[in-house]
Length: 257
Image (cartoon, rainbow, N blue to C red; front, side):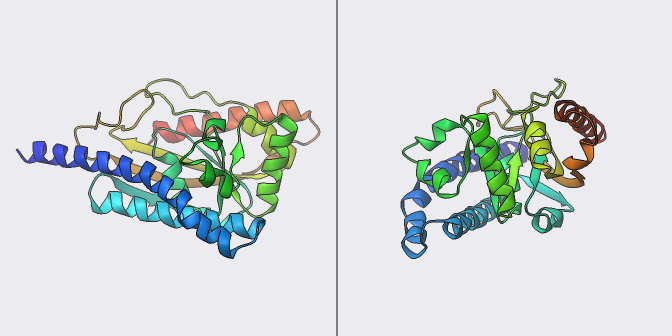
C-alpha cells in the first residue's frame, strides 16, 4: 500500500512539475524578463541578468523536486562548475532533466538550442533574452557565437551526443563540439550524469515513472584544455582524437557508475 501511494504521489508530482516548468517559462518570458529589460539597457549586462534569473529559477525548481520527494540528488565537486566560467561544459545526456540540473549549478550558462524555440510564442523571449545560440546558424556564425559566449565568461553547456542517450546502447558523440573546442582552444569541463532507475529517457512519456524514486548523480570531473590536443597535427585529426578520448572517458565512468 505504501509503495502504491508513493507511486501515485510521484506521478502527480511529476505532472505538476512539468506544468510548472513549461508554464513557468511562459510566465517568466511575459513578466520577469520584460522587467529586467525595462531597467537594463540592451547588451551583455541584460543577457547576464537574464541568465542569472534562469539560474535561480532552476535552483528553486530542483529544490522543489527534492522537497516534494520526486527525485533524489547527489552532487560531487559541483563547486568546479561555479569556479570554472568561460569554457565548455561537456556532459552525457541520460534524462530530460540534465540541462535543468546543470543550469541550476551554473550562474552564467549559455546553450545551443533548437531553432524551433526561437519562434515559440511561449519560450522565444526567454531563449533570445538569455543569448542562447541557435543550432541552425551557419558554421562561421555558430563558431563566432560560441566564441563570444566563452570570451564573455559564460559557460557553454554542450551535450555532445546531440540527443538523450538510450539505455543499453553504446555512446556515440558527434564531432561538432570537438571542432568548436579545438578552433577556440577552449577548456572543457567534463560532467557525468547518472540516474537510477532511469527516468525521462528518450522516447518515454513523462508519466512512465519508475517503480521507485530516481536518484540523480552529477559528478564534475576532469577539466581538459583543447589546445593540448592540437600540437603539430591537423585540427581535424585533433578533433577526432578528442572525441575518442571523451567517449572512452564516459564509457569508463558509466561502467563504474
